[in-house]
Amino acid sequence: MLRNLYMKHLLSAIAFFFLILFVLHSQEEWRLLTTSDGLSSNVVLNIFQANNGHIWIGTDKGINRYNGVFETDLYGPVNSIFELPSGQILAREKMND
Image 1 (cartoon, one colour):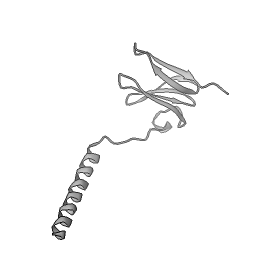
Image 2: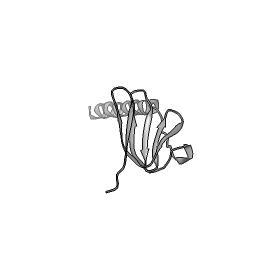
Image 3: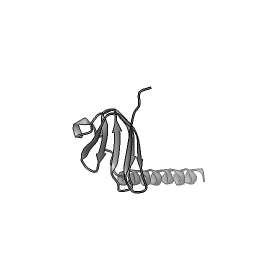
Image 4: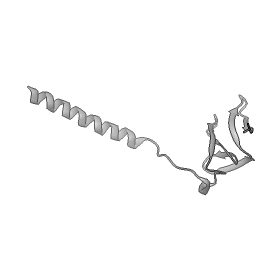
């Protein structure tokens, strides 16, 4: 009886392991983006995803929009990024303390 219970738990654990592997494999892959890809700086202060799907990244050297390629829209340190209901993006430069 103990052997049957052990086998049942072992098979359940193996099935769970394969289920987790399948789920992890189906997720999108992570990608590291740096200045080599067009980011204005590797020092990231803020990341924001707009409703239209664009990723806005505030760095110590500017704000970048990413939608497959980088576009730099403002130069200077940006630590806050907001989206208005109209879809307009507002960025605030970091103030010195």
